[in-house]
Length: 359
Ligand SMILES: NC(=O)c1ccc[n+]([C@@H]2O[C@H](COP(=O)([O-])OP(=O)(O)OC[C@H]3O[C@@H](n4cnc5c(N)ncnc54)[C@H](O)[C@@H]3O)[C@@H](O)[C@H]2O)c1
Image (cartoon, rainbow, N blue to C red):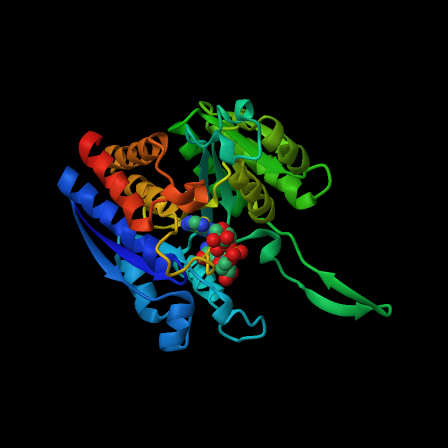
């Protein structure tokens, strides 16, 4: 197949990990007979420096006309002034809005050989293979009214949590579709014992589950879900949550595996187009040194192959090659490689070697 992919390297380690991942995608193209055409565009701080805006029109145009987008990371100390009118994160938020990306999908899996990197005991990690599906464009982060004022002589802050039936329905339906290709189990997170918004969430989720009778489901309050994530993480398959609860729980889930550098994500909306990126930031402390772990981005590219291009076998081949490289003891510095640590490019080459050998 022929596909166009927009590359948004962004800031910090972004260009290093995106360039390394592009090599892996090229190897997939050669191995499986596909042609990937890339459009490299600006976002974040790099875009601010060059164009004065974090999300130039050319970038959005390219994302809209491509099959999918692969992003590195944005931000860094250079653009950190909280009072600045133009900030790197505006690039991410603007892109989600412009492309209608309402779901963030984050798989969390424990790789054989990395059990020691986790803060949890190895026996708790054995079965960890779960996916967070977080609603991205609604909930308390966006509800109105929000603001700060003075009331009865007291400073006061307020936000509004609001979800419509449509927003709940589409995210729970997406969770069911993802679960259908996995263990067919969805856990819906809410706080229905206290919040009216979450009572509606539970009602609508229950209706969607009834329409998807092949999916085993349960509802869990966010507080007990937070506990269960560390006491029995292997019990989960797909976890669907609103914006704030999903934000908090998915970060808790990220530390289960012990390595930020390994975890991929996808932001999805209607249709096949998506934006794929590692969950970590731009790691300014190691930028430019060639030592960043590229595997979170490589695994994001695997998600891109599967979800936007329908290339399931190719995605699985990339995931297997990554797992094999880790099982073979290959480590970047963040994975505890010590003096024998691989560089960013050497790690990508190790994945390519295994892809060519076994893919
Ligand atoms: N989606 C995004 O683009 C995104 C997400 C989070 C943070 N940020 C931005 O990134 C900047 C730095 O944020 P932070 O330091 O809080 O988080 P970070 O994820 O960039 O870094 C946290 C720690 O993890 C390490 N790390 C992260 N990714 C790594 C990788 N691939 N390989 C090896 N080590 C890695 C870093 O060196 C650092 O020590 C900030 O400007 C922040 O706003 C961007």
